[in-house]
Amino acid sequence: MAQADLQPVRTKEEAKERGRNGGLASGRSRLAKKHGRELVRALLAQRELDPQIVKDLATAYGLPEKDITKEVAMHGRQMEKAIRKADTNAYKAVQAAAGYQDPDEANGATFVVHIDKATAEAVDKWTK
Image (cartoon, rainbow, N blue to C red; front, side, top):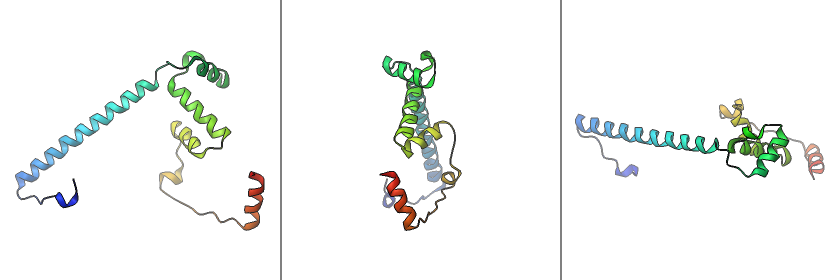
């Protein structure tokens, strides 16, 4: 609903009805989100994976094959991506899954790092 479509409330009864309708819609929305989360959690707990993936993860992380679920497989792949490709987003996903949170990101803090030209050139040479 666009803001221009909003009509002012004329009576207390109308305000009460709108509030009730909004509360009901909010409840339906929360319930739908809850069911969606439950479905995804159930899917992540499944063990129907490619046997080679299970074998690879069991070998790489020393886990019993019976403990490897889709969720474990996804987190394992994210860890590999974070390590092998230095992928910051994969690293953050693993950290979030483990329950860690960067205090600066939690507060929305940002910072600027100033690097002199010589340091930047040295880093460029090292990363090429």
